[in-house]
Length: 465
Image 1 (tube, rainbow, N blue to C red):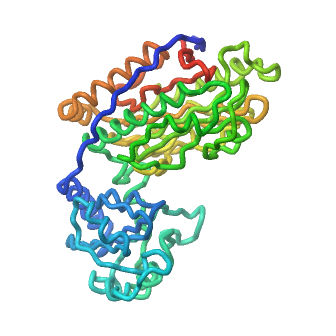
Image 2: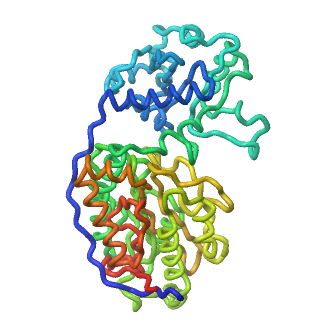
């Protein structure tokens, strides 16, 4: 049976702010134990987890501390002894960590020109943590590599060379291994195995972020500036931005990641892009500034049938195939008709994994054998940018895959969270015609919604089968 894509009337929900779950020392200790188990399995004597302002997520996952200006390094040995190295301005702020780790002031992590005369050397710190000839040390940055990039790829790391060089001098270059996959491998990474409490955190993040995102969408009117729309985001700082806020119109929107300006005003027919992400949640929509089909410019009069409807069909197929145990290759195959047709302008993976950082990894690629496991959070993120005259369309939201046991635990421990998730599943089926596998937990109140007319959020696309 051939699917038919039609316009439909919807009513977007109005959300209320919910409180974020509080993570305590025992939660971080449980994560530390997971790391110790992996260290034993992989034969590491010492693990070093690097973090800075941009590359904070693995460090924060273990400690609850994210460097605000400086570098930082968390070191743990196979017996569970650990220390946290911080710079001058991290010394006080690192008390935020519920883990309450032992700390060392390492002033070279501080900003340039600040005092550096009261710190032990890296060599002495590393030696005290057991780094000596022949010991196997895992280093965790943000990326790991494959033989596609380097021969002997496991010896390459993205953390600063002044740290790596010192470790190699102590234990030998062949004993320093990139261990980042321990955290972010697309199938086995520790951060891709959410607990019920972590799901509740990400759902609360998405719920609260939606409030500002909804307000920004509703503020789109001809003549408004990007900055005026952006001021409606209602960002409260409880969870930081995961990237710069994007509100852009016309030629600014074609830049992809442009920040709002106070001079660019919205015009009928403009390409519009609004992207808003905080830790654990991300929303993105792009399309054309139209009230209805009468606003379509002559050169784009066929955009609905040629572009928006095939795009929504791809979204529907994506959502209906994802489930616990499905491979990334199977997901890719479901949307291959769009991804591999150059007229749609899709250049990145049609979806990726998410955590505190907006993109941790992606298993969604041609012939990928990696499977979605219970506890993984991922984004439906098919970015189609064919250029003139259609420019682009993008509808990105997050889901979590949860097996029956994890769903029951979530429902028992966080019933209001689970109630909101079930309401979203019901919305998608009744309003959009998208039926989800039981393992799929929608995080967004506009999950799967494609607005053919960005100035009228009461009209969406629906699949009829």
